[in-house]
Length: 261
Image 1 (cartoon, rainbow, N blue to C red):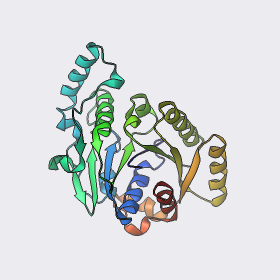
Image 2: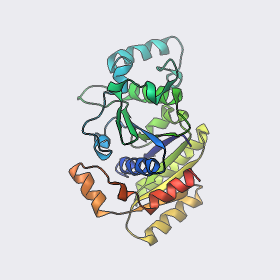
Image 3: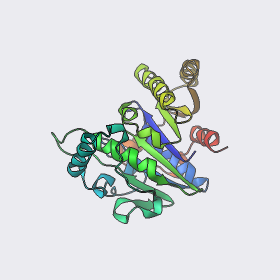
């Protein structure tokens, strides 16, 4: 698995899971590219230990306003939105310009773009950049990409996951989170991108973990790791800090053992 999409209901802990997985993968000797594809959540760079994010990739391809015009022109020419390609050639991590990537301790970080102002318009161009970039991204044998998707399932409608190898859906103990996870599994199967697995997060007890695991399994979605509720993780998120290596717990190791046997 080289390009791993991480998705789930808003607030389920996608960014936390992405950060912990990046630390665990790095500890196993691989290089990691974390891609922030969530246009609203602003704090992933802090969790990874970066003081500030890089310039967004949407600016590298001309900026949101210019990009919207290009997309409209392509669609007027008969190209459907889900087939619009903004990235015109293959790109490696090493070829991403320095202003658009941050690197620290073997973990690289790039971001697609954010919504910054009221009345700015929708995030559709960012979804197209995400899809185009992921389809053209070339990784070396020792490189793994983790993509922190926007909350919910809209990115499936834009086909962002077509550029990934598998999907990890983060599930917290709530009915809405389970329902979103099952919808993610259904949509992943529709576009046949590979395997889809679940990671439980903020689990208060083994009994709750078993109940959620059994229910998801009945619908064909297997749980490959579980992150218990952790007061220290809660405090780090509250204060805007970064995660230390020792927060890579047994649940994260279980996920990595499954992905990289």
